[in-house]
Length: 306
Image (cartoon, rainbow, N blue to C red; front, side, top):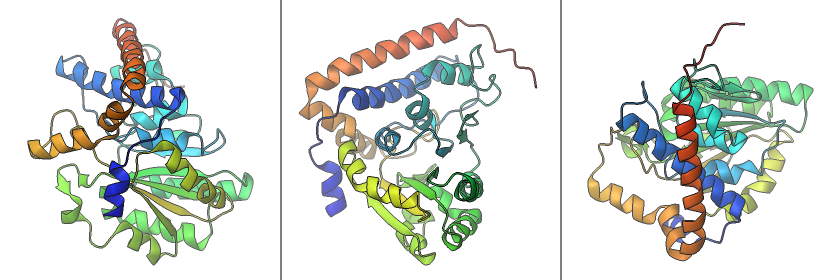
């Protein structure tokens, strides 16, 4: 009950930068679904609608020297890291200016110390190896890896957690637990709890049941500082996926989806601070519209291997 009350508590007012970024991520994801619906994109995509606050809250707790490992639902992670909507959309559309020449698409992106992959569980052992390198060569930096609740069905996850605990690695595991793995509820695919699984390896766990960015940062700042010293940490966000798994494949009942909309951070913020949200939301949508118009008009990316 405490977790539910925290999630539904009145949000504190965000500064313009944080709210603008959250709204830009949301507008970007909505634009992708619109482009797919009009037949302008190919393949598939997985949006982070409803979960935009997670990478935004973490943004100020990480620094450029940290490594970030993302997953299939990673557009918000990328935008929070780089603020590069043009490069990301060009990558997804395979147009000039694409981050990876248009060959990575929606899920597989590499830039500086950022890497995303659509293979479930793949990032955690890689992040663990990078955390070992950081401990040896760049003390004070962390490897931050985003996973979902469904990823805890992968054996490599536990091998990575075991090594991180034994070797005291600066590994920050961010679990975006939206309660559903594609179309399977967590109650049908996850025995026990994520907290219990972290405890099995002696790894600290913190459950975040709020979407309040300021409160998240207040709670996590000292914990992330400890992780930089070699104390691995699992942070579990009890969040909800607003959109479908990918494009239009949402098998949840309509009343459940409606409840998620009504209780999501966007709706609650709109009820409490309507003028603030309306102004910045209009700006974010206009910006993303302009980005989409520009990128759509570009010629295909001409990538050549180096």
